[in-house]
Length: 103
Image (spheres, rainbow, N blue to C red):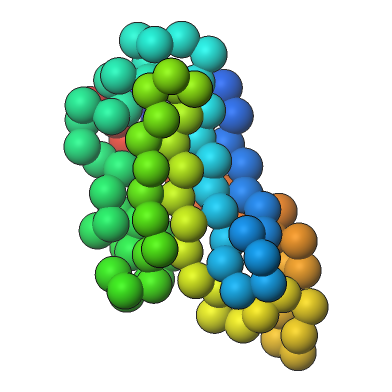
């Protein structure tokens, strides 16, 4: 098994407007992309567990084969830049993806 961080070229997060965060998983080769997608590990349940979310908090998970990427969008618990927001740009939210194990 490998960690997702070892297979992906880029793991990043960013705001998707003031009320959502987008996670991007990008690969530099089709083999790694297919391995991750075919493992089925990137799913609503895994993201909910990693981010302490409810399934209805996940807006979408998109698998984009032509771009060798996966995009996950979920609702923020507080809007960007408001009281209690600890990451105004949403740029520090990708870390929980790093240690996901891929068979």
